[in-house]
Image (cartoon, rainbow, N blue to C red):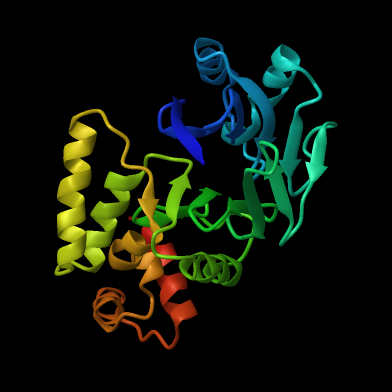
Length: 256
């Protein structure tokens, strides 16, 4: 068992600290800023074992060097590419064993947002960086729309109860777009109200779950007739496949 602690950073990033329930050991995911991580580690007297990196963007990696300098360069750094001298490169299907094998994560390669993007997951948790957001998905920067669509299709196959820990608090803006695409989606309307209440209280909207995203996230719903018809009417062009729908949807979101 682990506890996942939320560390807000910058204006809307989340760094995730995964704490072993049977010890003071922990790992962190995407530490773009070392300061809040060090503050939590020091305040709770934690021992950092490893750093997991989903992709190379600065707001996910800029705290790594400072963490290694402050806490010891023998800390494992896992990433797809060798972003640091200390990096251990990982590939699709590889297992990362933590906390004396009490906690194991698998690696999934999910290029699209960047070509080096990976996700870390097990039957209960998903750390997906900027590939999947609540109500949305990441922009396609380095990869192709086909790669991003394929990545989302793979994530969509995870168990409905899998908790989704993405790296940004983009939920309200994502849901605003989603409602423009599916204005009659009752699950989406209800979710928007719940998220708005959380944000008004200063609470994070994350984690979400795969099951929730299937109901409210347009990028998980490219096979839904109502969404396809509404998008075709908005864009005044036919959509022939799930990939067509995703590509049109992502392009439309880029300019929303």
